[in-house]
Amino acid sequence: MAPPTDRPRRLDLTQRSKLAGEAAAAAAEVESALSTPADPRAAAFFDVDNTVMQGASIFHLARGLYRRDFFTTRDLVGAAWKQAYFRIAGVEDPEHVAEARNSALAFIAGHTVAELEEIGEEIFDEAMAHRIWPGTRALAQMHLDQGQRVWLVTAAPIEIASLIARRLGLTGALGTVAEHVDGVYTGGLVGDMLHGPAKAVAVTALAEREGLDLALCSAYSDSANDLPMLGLVGDPCAINPDAKLRAHARAQGWRIHDYRTGRKAARAGLVLGSATTGAAVAAAVVRRQLRGR
Image (cartoon, rainbow, N blue to C red):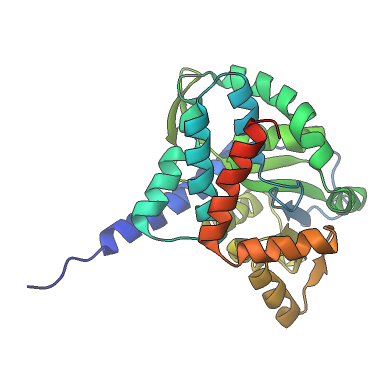
């Protein structure tokens, strides 16, 4: 008797990834009042976590919501471990991906979209604004000054991604779409997290809708998980790259910018070298920060 196969489950993950990209593209809000760019076919796409902002935006959001009694310490630590392992290792095991997906936005279940948007403004001011990398922000502004449109592309909820884009004066954002019914979050996602290949799907869909020529576009990221997106454009750039992306970028002759100090960059490389260690460190950071140390 032939052993069971997980092919149907893997196909399902591929379909969910595609759906996540399509949902993110559909949810992106482009400013209708923007002036026509010098070359309307050119644009730039920026990952957020460790590219535009130091650390993970979903963690800063979760920490802010925790302080407002949205959930327990145990919930936050558990989610931090799963999300760190998923992001660092790029794990494709169906069961683990399903766990990461199900825990990604479960903490906002039962809350309203309006509530998250209002609190998100507060959390941006208190936990995110000062963590924006000045160098990356300058790169984004350079594209804007050249008459190009600039989008964020992130696994963070689309509501938070759009908030960050608006506060930075960017065109818009592509992000994970959380399911909501009558303005109340269910705790589920539309498709999957906007991660890895899903970002490439979202960017491709947006480019088709906006009449962009990806060969004229730029993309920026810190993670090898975003190689599918970086490979779409004519001008890919590695920002604060992990070891795998740095090696790939050097081999391909891509631009590399590292805005971390040497010590921070070295520490990041060590953490990214081990998924298990990285996840454990993430959980420990959560505990330590929640204790106020």
